[in-house]
Length: 71
Image (cartoon, rainbow, N blue to C red; front, side):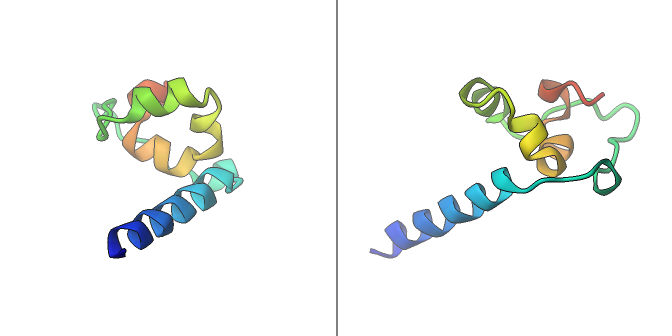
């Protein structure tokens, strides 16, 4: 039961992150030489939702910079 609740909380957090609108002033640019994906899931997320890089720009710029073309 605790696993199910943890998954539900994770899903709610992910939905909030995906639905958040961001402005360019909130988004940090990756430093030079850091054009890498820190998450193994980046390509999967992009294939599931072609707008994930814009919808979740703060997270995706930090963890999926290469896949999203931020650098």
